[in-house]
Figure 1 (tube, rainbow, N blue to C red):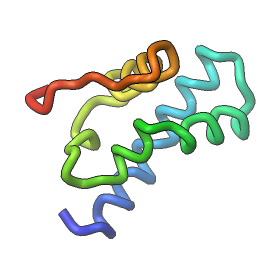
Figure 2 (cartoon, rainbow, N blue to C red; figure 1 turned 90 degrees about the vertical axis):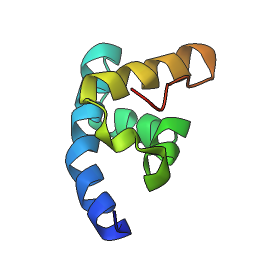
Figure 3 (spheres, rainbow, N blue to C red; figure 1 turned 135 degrees about the vertical axis):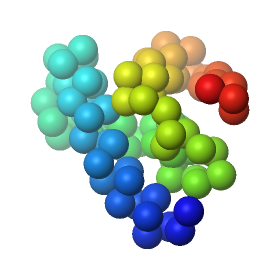
Figure 4 (tube, rainbow, N blue to C red; figure 1 turned 60 degrees about the vertical axis):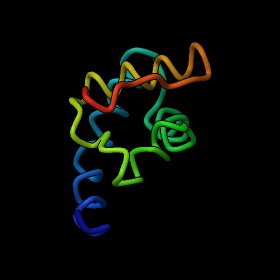
Length: 79
């Protein structure tokens, strides 16, 4: 997948994750966006080779929660 296609795909995925962060963490849009864009998960999602973009929004949110709680992201590449 080209970088342009990945960027377009993430433009559709990221707002859904940010919405879940806002709802579950009682944060403003700006706070949730900063938290998400500063996460390792977001950095990993920008790497096409990670294939994280193919996971559901809920699964990605759960990985984000795991990162917040443990400082780590554990996922199977077969997910």
